[in-house]
Length: 335
Image 1: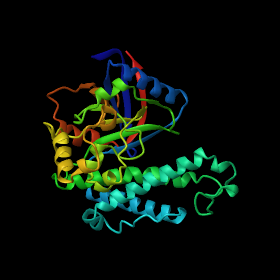
Image 2: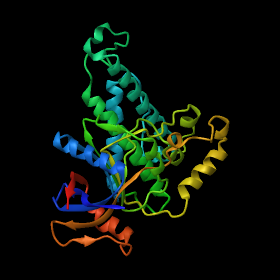
Image 3: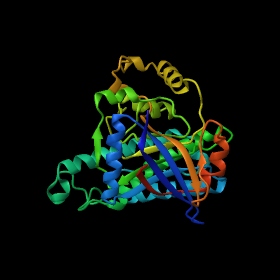
Image 4: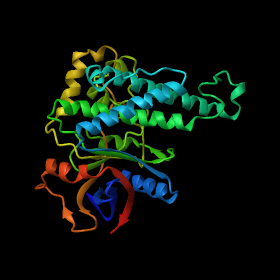
């Protein structure tokens, strides 16, 4: 079940004191793993830039700082874009009006679809002749800073969804990391058999293939109570994958919580009236595809510590993972 000749190595650092954390993952011995390994190696060979969203336990001050960055990013977008995004005003206001996060995510999807259409129409070859020309946006040339702002907006939306979920759970903040390589574009389509691998329940210490799709899948729409996304038929099940990988250190909820939550949410909102529940595997895609399991780590190149069933996961999240904040490198190593 596990590859014996290859492993995933992830190096993290603390950006302030430069302490280093090295994590190693055993890779599942399945066909899609070989294709994923190839994508990671290709991105590293091309020296593409590693992008990541590192979530850890935060202090109240750090949450406030992240909120201010979120607010400032929205203000920047509104100054350089032809649609106005909703101002989030204050942390308390946003906490009490979390539907704003769903509205902002819809704007992110709209931007992505609009940009894709412009690129397909070769708008930026001769903008002045295009019926879509607008001096504010899309303008004469693609605004790369604005584009980065929208990518950051997507991360910030999901980060605050996670932060607010932790408010009702004794502030046990979600500990995860999503990494990918930029510029994007290197990906593969999922094969029909790959859809058998989706797992609704994410386990502590496992790595999963990233969603790699503009929009929301059924699981995220349910978590965010995004009823409007379902009503406007904006659910987009995953159809492709890239080097993008999701490292999960959330404490296990146990049982069938994700499936039961979706089941109850579906019935409560009568979604069978607008969506056929008799979906094929590639239309449902609940969860993510597991790809590798966390096996051990070392700090500052000192003693290796093995991860097993005796590991105190909550303590590890606080005393190891949350002491770091930056992913420095990702690579496939040969044993």
